[in-house]
Length: 237
Picture 1 (tube, one colour):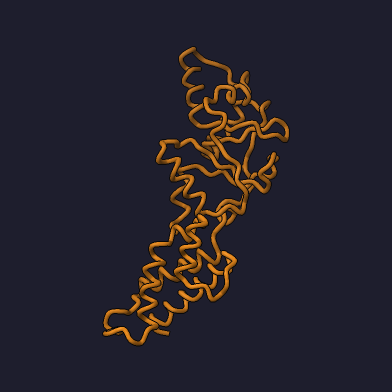
Picture 2 (cartoon, rainbow, N blue to C red):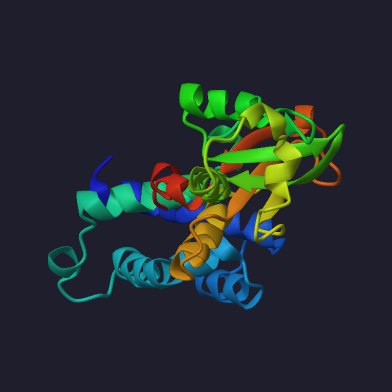
């Protein structure tokens, strides 16, 4: 198939997908679909609205025989076809966070020794630490809290870290609510938006915990830890 044929194929795929997801009739016009999707705050349709509206105009030129000089002014470029292919894929198979974050998370108990946590920091370069009291999530310890604690220790002389527990550090964490639990089926697009918002607010310590269940997750339920520094690996839409 040539580029115009491929363009129309992806255009029709996008139209069918939007109609299905919005629960509208298959015969609903493309313009009505994108307008309705945006009015319903569909995140992906809203994200692609301007592009889709532009491609709608190109499609109309391609399919209408009475457009003067149609072949000269209306040819879908390879770049346009590839973009339509990407949008069609993203609308049909939107990526969820479990496609990027799906592995056991190292967690700590309030009663764990601080020295044990610090050893893991050195081995695995962790910067965020989910803390549990038995099976109940009670907070997150950040790298900043550890740095502030160690700096304070240096100011007061040598301190035996064995005398301190993870709970002691958690009590020094300035923001106990600087995290959110999200489900494994949350869209990567939504996570990117949230991280982008946190970055714009200057909040680089914010944490998203990915869990199999979002209500009272246990240590075994956690499958990912996402911070604003993970933004680059989430790709682009």
